[in-house]
Length: 149
Image (tube, rainbow, N blue to C red; front, side, top):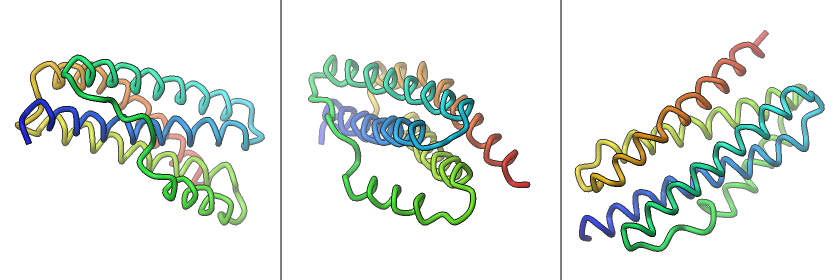
């Protein structure tokens, strides 16, 4: 696999994970009763949408075809099944699952930055978006810890 196609592949992984996150947050925003939490989820879904758009443009610029879906439908069904199965505090269930999704995205971003095959242009774009990813991760991690009574 040449560097260009490897770069597009790596960025498409990030796009798919970010898109999963966007869909999870949008779904969760409609399910939680807490208005402040719903607003937070909606805001983070917007951040994920921006990440997907930016990375898609970078893939196109590298001559690739951006991913147009999430990782796989099964992961979403599993996610919703797990959340619905969470007994007791539904809001905590969502926050815990969404925080895991943030872990996954942050790890994928860091892996792409350390991958020697990532092109300089792609590395620059991933580096530019990283603070947003780190911020969303920190917000959800802190929220999860605050909810553990």
